[in-house]
Image (tube, rainbow over all chains, first blue to last red; front, side, top):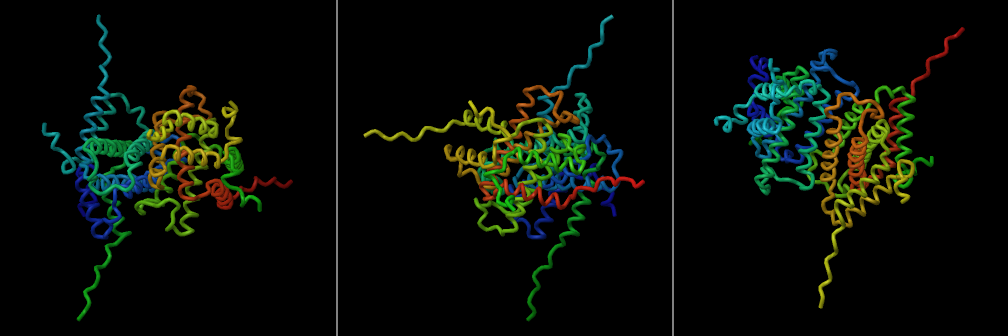
Length: 122
Length: 122
Length: 122
Length: 122
């Protein structure tokens, strides 16, 4: 059961893309996976993610007051968004990993690191 | 410039998580990155992603009729959703890669592969 | 049972606002109705609305192929979005009817009616 | 300029439906207004609405700390969601006012008013 140990450190976008591709193919779901169908499915999952947070007021980082089962549920909804996003990218022919690295570089240009506070001269 | 070559094959969720963490820390943005702030930012990006598709009617797989600049724009919006999703997961203390693999396994149980059509006996 | 006959012709935004206000007050739900809680609830309902359309491919105007029960379900999800939108506006102190009329006037300025094709002179 | 005085008290859903219908017809936009196009446009506007709230942390009822221009902007985004929702309902052949009143009645059955705390007997 090595798979249980896998996580952010080892999971590439390609792994998820391949698994989603195989999942759809094995179930003959590819005919349903048009770009706009997948986009609306993604919006549906974002709705479910929002429902988890909707009546909670402000939520602290790390979710210190959440029950374990709530965290598991949150992980499922975050995953559903991710999996449809990966699948939508694949169906559109976009390399999401490459696009994400490029976007981070663009963001770094748009929002440069501010200068540190200058040391006052003596 | 090896980074240009990186993409889905090499980009792990950890890489993106680390880059988003560093990006926020270098700009002193961590105080803005509460779970619900990030969730609403993600919803905002899903809106921008939807705007790309809103007046297009049905869109074919692979986007054969799209201009290159439209595909680049799409890659940016897909990335924005991904980056906020990765950041939201991190701030909530969820290992998104592990959760996504688990969700795929749950989906496989929920939607078993249908039996192939049996070969008719002679 | 006059209420069954009411609909778009008679229902003002004020009627819905008042009903949502009374509904929340009678159930002591006002403490849950903060702006961001209501916004996330609205996003949740937009997700449920999207789920109705997600696997349908392009849908024709008037929904000619939909079953009656699907249309009823659609009416419920459209309503949920409307009711949270009305409630969110009220809690934010925004007169939604006035704002909507103003927005239509702004849109008419932004997108002027195109000139009709001129009649060719003989 | 009586129109400026109009608002929640007088604006019916039919008024908005008629204005949206005329607006589209005058600009020959009806061919763009398919159900899924309008739905994605609505999602886009919900994204813009969310952006207003995304970095604000918890927001108090009545928006006491907001500048007037922020409230005007909020009214515009709330309106955009409403107008696409009204238009989507119209294009789908749903009487949104009737559906909303029905949904409130269903909600009242689903969530009955709790009994008041009983008066303790002497």
